[in-house]
Image 1 (cartoon, rainbow, N blue to C red):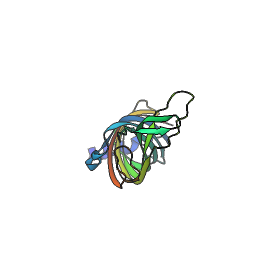
Image 2 (cartoon, one colour):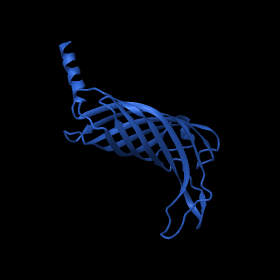
Image 3 (cartoon, rainbow, N blue to C red):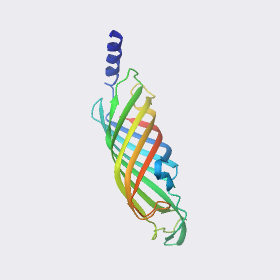
Image 4 (tube, rainbow, N blue to C red):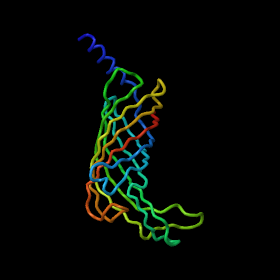
Length: 204
């Protein structure tokens, strides 16, 4: 019992050092799961996030995430300079919060959270040559709302907790509707994603 109380005291004490503003950038895979694999495939993924930490326990989060080419759009898109080979981007916008989990290690942070998420899939075209406009007249899009949950482990590189590296595992579930985008059909779909983000963070 005394050992448990000592460990708990250390755990609660280590979270007294925190910063209010927390930025992260991460990369990894975005992996569709379940029936979503019928029309989406695993794609490279970039994650940008900001969190405002109110106290040692709670943080509000907002993010902007992009997967590249998951819908496998190979159709030519009509632009100002004619037909251009098309692509697609999958945008994910999570809005929620997290709880920090006490533990006895000063440089390790554990957290879990969730909230609402908006998904937006869009057909795109390449940037093109300098001096040419690429306004797309045939690019289609679709979107919808859902929710997400995440778990994170981070390691602080300095004693002041200004810099950290970490990994976030995230699950997103949302219904999207609208136009067909690549292999995604023009019907309402229930989309499920798992993302793994390897992150670098700055806190102050």
